[in-house]
Image 1 (cartoon, one colour):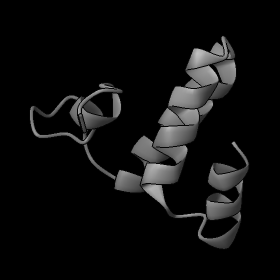
Image 2: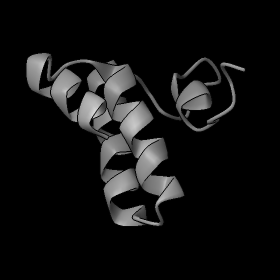
Image 3: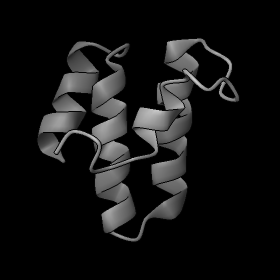
Length: 66
């Protein structure tokens, strides 16, 4: 968590930090905080979240990088 917070502090436009922290919040059962971070990540991508090529497809899948 500290690493994500520091990354966001250093670069508030770092989408992957919000995404990663969101997944961590989700695992901790802090759904409201997770949702806020996922929404921030989406806002930063500035795309239509309903598009089939939306980064939401990657953001919503925690294991997409395995």
